[in-house]
Amino acid sequence: PIYHSITSEVVRAINSGEAPRFKQNEVEATVFPRRTLEDGLIDWNQPASRVWNHVRAVAPPYPGAFAHWQGGKLWVYRISRTIPFLSGTKPTPGSLIDGDISQSKMVVACKDLSIEIDKFTFEGYVRHQ
Image (cartoon, rainbow, N blue to C red; front, top):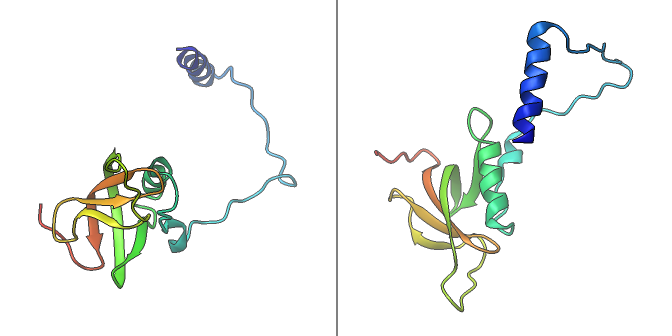
């Protein structure tokens, strides 16, 4: 609500040429390093919400999110939901709860919840959907 109002005002000011303009001070400017492949490594010991946001943050066309999995590399492109652990259980983060690489979905444990991965590849293996 209030953000929409502020955004609308800023967009109007930019479009009308009324927005203040400042030249960047090149001496104070910094550059953020480029992403690398290793930035996509999933840490299953994180809460499920952080894993989910990490997958979204490094989604293609960036290097993508991945985990070392059964001797290969599991590329995770989309998580569809979180799932509470069964009552009284706390699986090891990174353990497979349901599904496998040949199916259309996998459920993997994180620190606090499991996540359902519904778009992934395993190294060169591509599922036909």
